[in-house]
Image 1 (cartoon, helix red, strand yellow):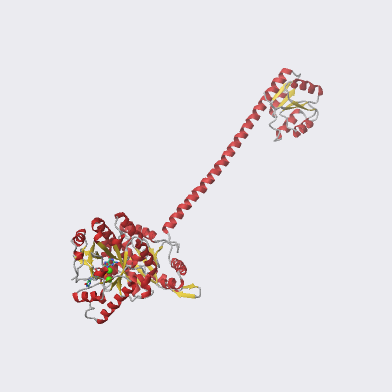
Image 2 (tube, protein in one colour):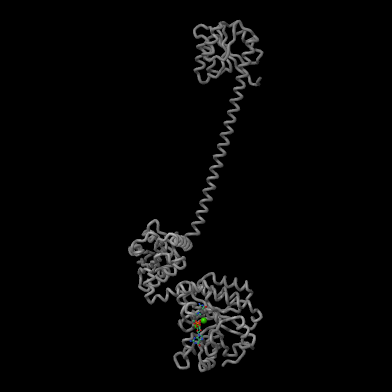
Amino acid sequence: MTGIKLTVLIVDDTPENIDVLSAVLEGLGCELMVATSGPRALELAGRRRPDLILLDVMMPGMDGFEVCRRLKADMSLAEVPVIFVTARADDISTGFAVGGADYITKPINADEVLARVRHQVERQVLLRDLRDANRSLEERVRERTAELTLANRQLRVEINERRYMQDRLNYLATHDFVTRQHNRGALDAHVSELLARIQRQAGSAVFLLIDIDQFRLVNETCGCIAGDELLRQFAELVAGALSRTDFFARTGGDKFAVVSEDPSEDGGAALARQIHQHISEFEFQWEERAFKLAATIAVVRIQRDIVSFDQLMLMADEAAYRAKREGRGAIVIHDPKRSAAEPHRESINWALVLFDALKQQRLRLYAQRLEPLAAASQGPVPLLHVETLARLWDAVRGKLLMPTQFIAPAERFHLITDIDRWMIDQVIQLLAEVPELHPGIGQVAINLSAISVRDGTLAGYVAGLLARHQVPGRLLCFEITETQAITNLQSATGFMQQLHDLGCRFSLDDFGSGFASFTYLRRLPFDSIKIDGMFVRDMDTDDVHSGMVRSMAEMGRLLGKPVVAECVENERVAGQLRELGIDWAQGFAFHQPEPLTADLLRRWVGVGAVAQQPV
Ligand code: C2E
Ligand code: CA
Ligand code: CA
């Protein structure tokens, strides 16, 4: 049956009956409790719950039925099975009615008692096992539930972390570190999406380009920490003037942009005025100083005729340029019809012409040879020196455009770095085509604009190209103008050092035009000096100019650097230069710039054209 000892309570007012029942049950190995009255039985049962009760029906005072009723009414005892012990057959139904489980008839028959008691005991044991099984099952379910809850919670934490990291990455990729506003990349994406939408569904929006007027002043007089703080406060200020649906971004430097899809009747002018109002009420404080701010705002209406972000930026830049000319704090609305009738039209055309030219490969590589003057400064065979010059093919007018026409607009529209890189690409590729000529080449000069010199990635770009095409760096010379070098002293020095390490050389272009001090010039690691053509061209007729060329030649000697004179247009000038001990001459008197090709290089180096005596 079971290893656990069961407790049986025998209730009878006749002690002899108790004895008989006890004797019968002894063989079952149960623990017995006895009571001789109903109240006593309830008390015992309450104190220690029996597993089975044998209950006499006929007892004085409280009979067995009443005892059973009370047991069943007690939550803790209701489950204890009761077997009535009775002499009367008609008690049986009452016994079941009050909750009895079975009955035993008097006189007591041992076998019957054993059989019925055993039955109840077995049932009790089974019930208990079932209860135990249920309990452990419940426990396991509870444990699993707890585990699941924990796993779930962990999963949720992980999901949240992942989502947070994803959001953070997205945020960093699309926001500006200083102002926490959107960056140029995000603006590009937003505008491109908007333009596509406008192409499909019509509609219009306005684009505002905001340029802080005194940013450089603050940045230079108070330092870049103040500059950053100004940008942050300025961004907050402008953001405060916008509505929630406006898109706001920092496009770089001290420029911000707003895209508003909810333009007022006047196409953005009201919004620009509102931003101006906010700015005019603001004062930037730094340490003891206070700066009143102003900003130039260019407004462009975004319509179907604008097809790309770059095009939009060019238009906005053009309007901003016009706004700057109108003075501090101006608002200029870009109006294609009005612009067309104005002299500024040239500049708009330039923006688009340049933009297309770069895309359609309409730049041309030209070169002009330098002529050795002072044989003393050369080796036994003077090596080929050339300066490359950019040209632009104007397909519409069918003619070549000169750098004097397009370099300034290219700088204004930030396209100059593309032009400079294009020239560098072409020169290096060309040199890679003719490795056999390398020993005969002294240097190929490439002009660089200030913006390229400031571009921190250009030196690495050149290094990469030289390595890829296996072209020795010593073949390249970069020409940087005096003013560019001085105004970007820091970046120019770093840039020059990096490229010097690769063997590249530097020439100080347009020397004399900027009147830079000798001390400054000494600080920059130039390898040669190029006297500005404006002094050379007419030095045979202008005494002041010839005097200046003389002192510049002197200066070159003091610095220990070879000197080149450009714009040598006639033999008289060439003769004077020779007398002054100038090393190289460059000009129409010797050579007109022409397209630079591998064949031309072969002709120059191969036939020994360089070795010919100067005119
Ligand atoms: P630069 O560096 O001073 O170049 C010399 C300019 O003088 C060239 O004009 C050349 O054609 C011209 N020249 C040569 N010999 C004579 C002469 O005997 N008389 C006269 N009057 N002029 C002569 P170009 O090609 O129009 O270039 C003008 C300027 O544009 C260059 O001045 C240079 O600063 C810039 N430039 C040219 N190509 C590039 C380029 O690829 N990148 C950059 N950033 N600037 C360039
Ligand atoms: Ca030059
Ligand atoms: Ca020059």
